Image (tube, rainbow, N blue to C red):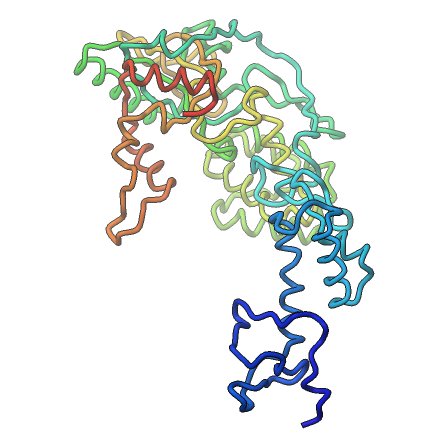
Length: 440
């Protein structure tokens, strides 16, 4: 065998991970897949492959901080080695190995979806940072003054969850960024409904479908009768896309369509998807598309928004669903996470709970619950903390197959049960500590 094939490069022999095959010292071939083991030739990965692999892992080590700070001797040596093995200048190699903050946009690749839309308003990459998008609004209704209360103010009562979207209340959305709407979109709430026009004129505290309002009424009345305790209804934020059920996102998207560069083929593909659930679909480019969506069922509106929130539509130039959802979201909930609770709290009128014929109707929800606004917590609290007695037994809970229950499984059970929670001293202490320190 030619002696040159057995000569080693100047670096020490490295053997670790998947490449740890024991061989005699300094017998591993540089290029060919063999070495000596106990004096006899045997198969083994060549030294070049081992060193190339280890160089390949250097960027990961740098990202984890294992190579020291930028400019350190360790980092400089690693950059030199990476450059030699991959045929680039050490300065360029050093740039590739230098850890970059997640908030810094790396040269040459542009911002990531998470950088543009960290809270997930849209399902696909946003055309710009959500935080830099500007919703053009005008006050339509002056909300009742906001009241700040503490969990201590609720001690001795039961809390009942009002699951709701994060939409704004009392505003007219007149445009988004460079687009001026032909007709403004009325934003009706959302958690702010408790302080809006219907609340001020008719003591309405919540709006939803007739079946939902009836269910809430029955549960709250039953809890009050069984315990003899006052029942306060606490708002629990749903996800950013829960708003799709309402009229506002669909109407706002419809207003942007005339300003969007949508090809005939893209419109035809979109319409094909919509006609799978709505045989009467008039076409996304129809002049009356907004009015159609306003009067359509909530399921049709949701299908419209979510079909537009997919890559084919977004890549074809349709309006940004993520930016539109953000535009119709309550300003104080822009950074809110699903499950955050306490933004608004109200009490139902036990004697006459349902408003039969609302004088201030909600464009999405036909039924309203009578009651009054109590206030809101200064610091939103995770629902898992508020509804302690429901979630505590689920810690470590497993499915029938033995797997740990996922958070989504627990949330599904929560929505089915809508449990109440007694505000006792333990809960007061826990939430007060969380509010003061920002942790449990």
